[in-house]
Length: 308
Ligand SMILES: [Zn+2]
Ligand SMILES: [Zn+2]
Image 1 (tube, rainbow, N blue to C red):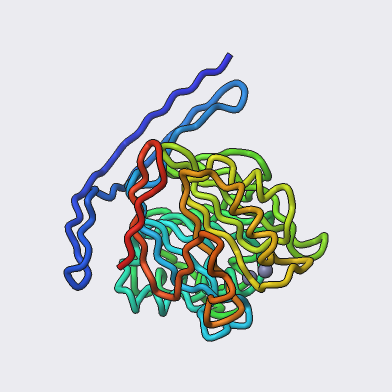
Image 2 (tube, rainbow, N blue to C red; image 1 turned 90 degrees about the vertical axis):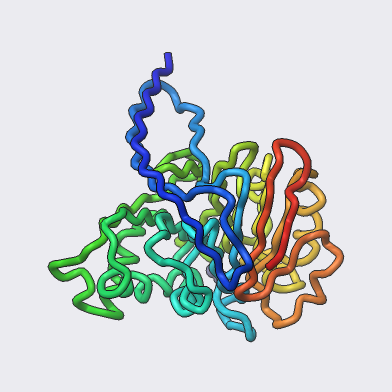
């Protein structure tokens, strides 16, 4: 028998900021402290990304490791959640005047530098500039805490010395196991990228009616279809036209997109060229660095997408 008790304490504060007069949030961001007690078999958890049916996707970087006149991969969701943390993360957050203390979750897909070498700079920012005692959740493959701390201390040896201000909560992803941490429910899906020692995860992040699906880096595998099941928003890697043992190519993506839910919107990223002509005609949106998209996601039907 399943027994679930959810206790929530919410501190809600209004935010009526606008950037260059272009955008005013239609919903109230909120800080949430969530205590969960779950007994019995795996519960169906129902906590959603903040702002729920309105999603703001900011592409901080859309290139691959070789930075082909695009910055390294990183997507900011609703100003509060990061999908990967490429090396140019901090400088691009500042270019867009993002309030970095609002970032509460970081999902790392794997430990290649183009996906997590931005963390030492962001953590340094939290140490000295953007101080907050709000917890920061960092989800990643096994060993995430050791990897992130080692990278940060290689860059700045005293970064975690006495006086570190921000609570860090590291969460090791477990393939296929749904978890809720500080108000965000997610399911890691094991992807295939690199050798046997390379753990790589895509993430399914719960929305009110479906999920946000993010591949990170992967070659074609049936797990990609598991990842996009019931997805309303897809962010897929599109590294080069040719298929490769470690990345998706155009033919695989054509198939994936043809099987994506009809009521979804898809974005491609992790490109190996500055232009995206090669990817036209697949029915996906092809973002550039620093572009922001606003999605209204109805209960049924595809999201309405606006572009700043
Ligand atoms: Zn990569
Ligand atoms: Zn990679």
